Amino acid sequence: MSRQAGFTAVELLITLFIAAGFIAAGYQLYSVIIKSSGDARQQAKASNIAYDYLRRYASQATNPCTIVAPSPTPTIPANSNLANPSITASFTCPYGVGTQVTKISVSVLYGNPQVEVAHALFVTK
Image 1 (spheres, helix red, strand yellow):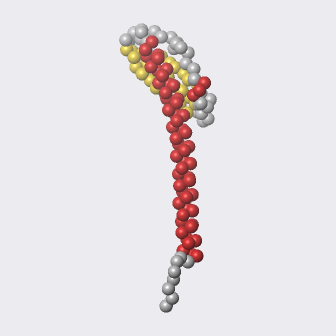
Image 2 (cartoon, helix red, strand yellow; image 1 turned 120 degrees about the vertical axis):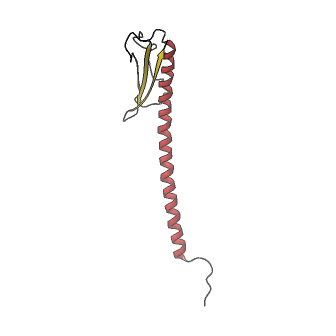
Image 3 (spheres, one colour; image 1 turned 90 degrees about the vertical axis):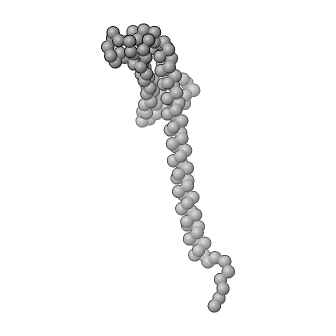
């Protein structure tokens, strides 16, 4: 009977293949997480811009359903780092012109393909 000291080459090779599989899976997971965090960051920036304008317009709504155009005209800040951004704001009277309820909607489009982030608020005064 002979005693074996250490590992055989086959055992080491199998261990290396398993380790390489774990490293490859870890790298793929890491790249997915990095991409997702970038998408989430862009969405958060667009959401913050839309919400900021929504709050501005809500504070200006003194006579519901009489605001024709938003003031100031919505623009995307130059330092937002959003690709192909555009912003729209609208005021509607969901229950008719004679009511005291105004719906303010602000949406931001960005990226390619376009992703939309929208916020809306009902205002009564």
